[in-house]
Amino acid sequence: MINYNLRLIKKYALASIMICFLSISLVACKDKKEKAETSDHTLNEGESDRMGPPPGDRKGPPKGGGSPMQTKTLEEIGGYKIGEKATDFELKNIDGKTVSLSDYKDAKGYVVVFTCNECPFAKMYEERLITLNDTYSPKGYPVIAINSNNPDDHKGESFEDMQARAKEKGFTFPYLVDEGQKIQPLYGAVRTPHVFLLDKEMKVQYIGAIDDNSRSPEDVKTKYVENAIDALEKGEKPNPDYTKAIGCPIVH
Image (cartoon, rainbow, N blue to C red):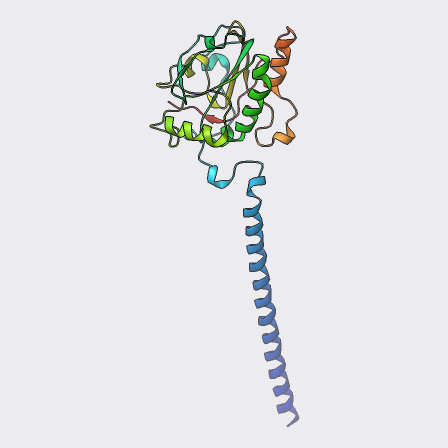
């Protein structure tokens, strides 16, 4: 009788342990699920604060893949070198009118930047280009943006898309379309954005990136274009006069 009772007690004890174990497992699973849901919700709310663009904007690079950093040298690219005179151009602006460098009669220099609509890196620099133009255009150094992407191969890069993007972001500078990619090879632009700072005589004085931190304007330590303009204002040569551009490849 005693052995029977002991076996019964052990049986109920084992059953109780199993029930407790299952209860603890269910609670742990529920907590894990709730934490995951909370984490996902927090991520969605904070996406606008990401160092890079939100997932919905990740449409670049359009082609080519690989590292966003320019890898070829100026000699390998085959465009303008430091000190060479750039050829003037006539390109259609988003307002339908043509724009040339010679239109800027009082210019002391030109910030020619090759950019586009859909590249995440180009998007990260839109506000900075507006600030750059608003700051330096009154001083004689206007920003002139050019889109050389082939709209047939790059979704969202048509002339109408350019007009819509400029209106949405409030561009204060001309946004020109390089139809047939006639100007981009002359300059040797290979990334978006890619800056070519020209002096009053249209000689190239700086080529490369806008600054040293594409993902976070707050963490920029060196503003290459601004420093180059300031050097020209002092009658000095920019130093450095060349940096590697970071962005999506411009593909024919």
